Length: 114
Length: 112
Image (cartoon, rainbow over all chains, first blue to last red; front, side):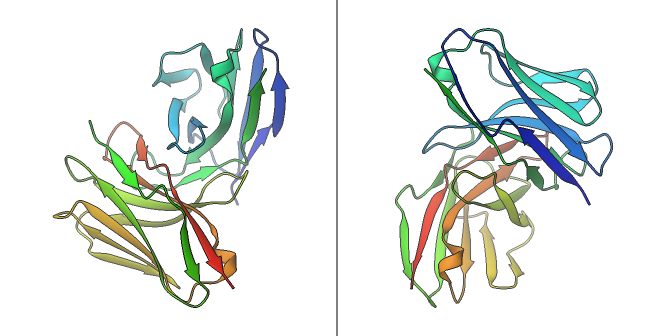
């Protein structure tokens, strides 16, 4: 069966520090991968998605970046965090290419920037 | 641009009753509409998907309807239980670009 792992679960970082969140998927190959951010009281905001190794599409201009060094690995990074980067970050994959597929989410990473 | 609205106020329902959550959208109808459950501090979990040419979809105690005239989807939980308490999210799939448009979710509280 397919599983998705995301870490760390919680982190507190000072403003200006770097960030690295990692997500890996098991039990499937060539998945479409997504990074979302969820702010309190708001819908999930799509940050990045990837359809293959090295292929990253950015949906929101910001100081975050994403990379996909391996087929089932997706990394969210920042060189210098801002206060506004605080939030709940979720990695997800979709089994079917394109639409009509459900998203499977990781457990999330709670980031607090102080 | 497409917007999606869910009731931001928590919905309190007595155990055993039917809970009904609403998802309204603007502009053109999505190809698909999905419902997810999210528990505090956890990632959303997929529940049901309904296509634009489907009026209704059922799964155990769950039922979803899709009215493209009203631009609305209703999510029903029959014989509700305290374990059904969670935030429920709806998401529109416009059929392209691998993206879903998400509602902010409605918090459902089932009281014993």
